[in-house]
Length: 272
Image (cartoon, rainbow, N blue to C red):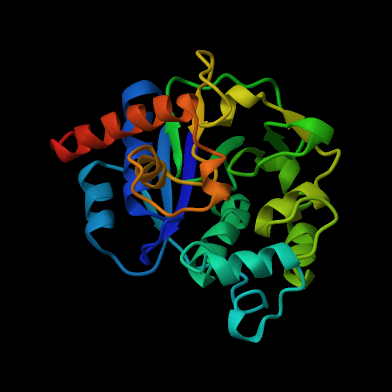
């Protein structure tokens, strides 16, 4: 099965090229999945690394970039107070680059029309073993939580079923003001609101957040929120990050941070 990551030539903490490399390294070591990277922008050392490691790259600009209105943050068009606060206090995380990268997952059905299933993952994941999924007959397979809410950092696309909703969903997203009935952030609110009742639960073990606890059955670890380098600074008491980040630090997240750095160290030693 193909696993798709989206990123771009602008480096920031959410589309970090280092996160992407570690995700791919752990995937190659621990799974039989086939990584593919959708890349927006110019070629650089990271695309060179991907080519050296035989990782397919699709150079692509977001198909509806000229239609979407969410990118002009200077005019504060967003009506979602939570997002406005994040733009204000964490501009290095929530910015134009991040939103474009977030939105690019919506082009997956157009880029992989002949695939039956495609797994999308954020760059801030780590693979521990091959994921096992139930049969997904709905447009999406996701790890649901209370009230069927789901994080959209890991999604299994049933391409044939998803295409039935594809254009309507893009229209819904483009015309939104980033205020969604369910969820409070970017594409996650859009997916949860539009696809409510149209998803299959693939189990939290396939989108296990690093601060949930150590789970020996987990296949995909997701560093949702603070990234490994940010958590490492918290562990080393070398940071002023606020309570939002500190709440994600515990002995369990420390365990997964150590694992993540192990895969990074392999890369630094020249492991392909």
